[in-house]
Amino acid sequence: MKESDKLSKKEVERASSNSDKNLIKLYKENKKLLEQVNQVKKENKLTNEDLLKIIKQHLPIPISIFKDSSPLESLVKYLKDNLNLGLSEISSLLNRDQRTIWITYNNASKKKLVLDTSSKITISLEFFSERELSVLENLVDYLTDQKFSISKISSLLNRDYKTIYTVYKRAKEKDAKSK
Image (cartoon, rainbow, N blue to C red; front, side, top):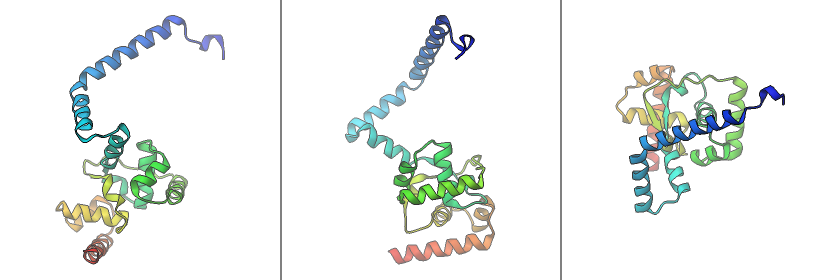
């Protein structure tokens, strides 16, 4: 390391001071939220790990990531690259084998998928852990339950109407068999 690349003692102290001020400001802004989270933890006797797991299960996933690519690949890539989750954590949250998640992420990376995260319409991550339905079936099932039409869903996902209709019918058949 060159001498010119090193920070002076004053620069380090100034950066530390600014960092501390930012942390204090952030704490003050979120104090009520932190108090509410602590209250929920106490009432439900949750550990930090339990609380994190619950939060991760309910992460909002923008439906626009599912446009034009494999739904599972898109979901795994989004969770890994955008939310910085580990592959083992993703496999746990999606109720899938770690090897499947690793292969899926590898395939998505080779394709150099670019995910569109602009959608205001989201779906909770927990819907994708239901293994009776595929990722796309879960997505279409959720959106139809939210009163989206098949044509609107096909438009949102940039897929053929017939494909979405077939996926919808398949999901309904699977739901009927499981009841």
